[in-house]
Image (cartoon, rainbow, N blue to C red; front, side, top):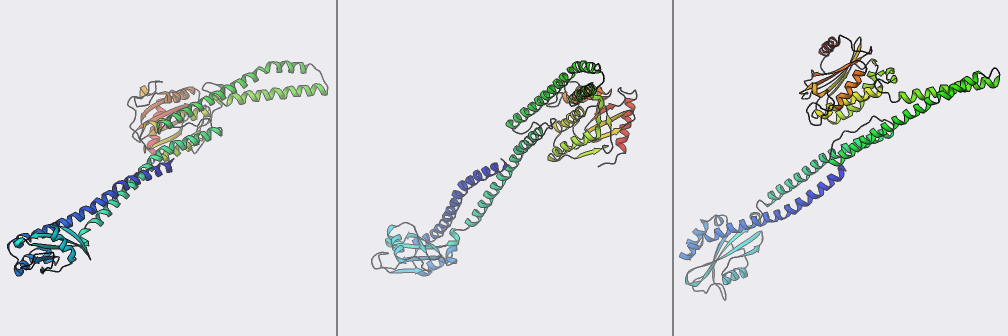
Length: 467
């Protein structure tokens, strides 16, 4: 798509440049020619008064020499000799200066009585008839070199060529930038579809770009959510159906226990025990794949450092596309938290998604993990404009007043934190923007020194050397 846009811009701009530059170049050439011959006509007209007064050779020579063309040797005057009829018939002509035009052209100009141009070696000769005494007609010849006819034409053509080339290059550059803005969301959509096909169900696409790509991104996200819901429903159904098998298995186990001794009885009891173990494994596997806050499987927990490293690999690629500086700290050692892996990943995605959605491109952000005695603290800070009303931002469905803000993302984070007995707080980060502090309690309830722990986090941030 990108190269197609570049080719279209190149073709359209090229045609426009040719359509305007070629006629304009021809007009410039004609203007230069008209300017040269107009100047020659003015030079020829300066001799008219002298010819009207006298035909004396010496006086006419001085008059010719007083003009710019005469001084340059580019003017000649052809005056009929005394007693002759002028041009036509047998002629006697007094010539002042160097004649370049053919005599036939001189005779035609005198006979017709209007100016004409004759091609001569090295240029053109302007022939200007002028009436003299006794009804005779003299012809003033002004030589116009080829250089005067094309003076400034080459420069004008070079300027037009340069302007046309600059327009083509500019249009190609703009088309390339527009193509990049169009192609990048499409590539991300394709990559997300590929990831979803490989089983990474948490992948989502940022809604940006043209209206069509936004609609496609929304449709993809909706489809991914629906796939997750369907898979979760299937897992729950599998777990429920498996759980129902426990009742007949219990009956089988009791009946097998009453079979007494013997190889067949032992084999039956072993088969029942193996089947019961397999059903238990199915139930645990089905329920642990989609735990939620408060679900028993959520108590298994996960390594917060591992989850954050994994999600930052995803967000760092987007940050590189938007020229954002990213800092990640505190994930070099394990940090076990009583939160399901998928729920912690969703909360981190919600916070980082807000950074990308509500701060300009190029805004830096950081993710820090701190291990306290009774909690793991996750800090997501940015250098953006901040949040005007932090209290409203944490209320579901209200948001912080910024365009596109609904408060749903932070509500997800809040519910994850509260499922451990912790909380979420918003404040001003050391980067100058918003800081989201997620307190994940390790003891199942929020400690009384929660605020004290928050101050420890501030001091810890102050000791960290700047990047």
